Amino acid sequence: EIVMTQSPATLSVSPGERATLSCRASQSLNSNLAWYQQKPGQTPRLLIYGASTRATDIPARFSGSGSGTEFTLTISSLQSEDFAVYYCQQYYNWPLTFGPGTKVDVK
Amino acid sequence: EVQLLESGGGLVQPGGSLRLSCAASGFTLSTYVMNWVRQAPGKGLEWVSSISESGGETHYADSVKGRFTISRDNSRNTVHLQMNSLRAEDTAVYYCAKRLPYGGSSGGFDKWGQGALVTVSS
Image (tube, rainbow over all chains, first blue to last red; front, side, top):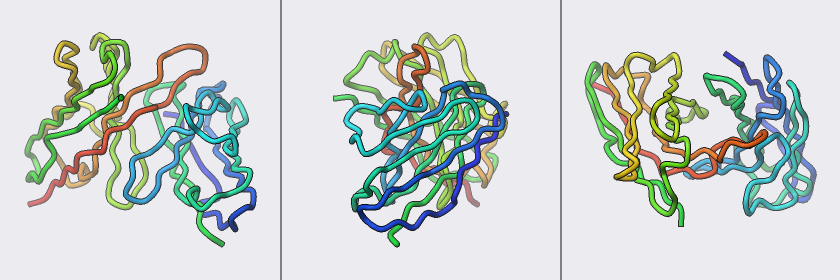
């Protein structure tokens, strides 16, 4: 099983600032990685797939990078609606696995 | 509009069974891999099971293997999750999710239902 880890567990950021979230896989995924956003009481929303491709209707301030075992989600200028929990997920191999999540909250 | 609507959740005793259904609309179900993902109260996301477009290939998390069965009826636009021998640790919101089409590094779940709460308790 591919183990996904995310850091930090919590990231405190002021609105307008840049946020950088990390995701690491226990083995290479090539680019088979997705990022999701989940707000309290809401369903997860796909942000990025293929490590760097924005999903439909996702704002350009969200960007993904990386390949292999190290991946990054960057939010260039945090808006109030971006405070949420962010999960990475690998779909390179079965079983599919999610990271534990990074909570982005207001500094 | 693409929609996924789960049903069948509820309270069940340990050792009991429950069948979740996911009604799909707004897209051709038979051309997509479908999935179940769960989220225990206050916890993160856990992938549970996936089924191929035709239903001929299924995959399960180790935590549910041998107890849960995923199936689909493309003619009725539905996906099911039969859950047997339920345990307290199966308590969670269960989401039905549609996978992006295969191609290159395309993947991830681009559409999720609202979820069905399953509570396993005596």
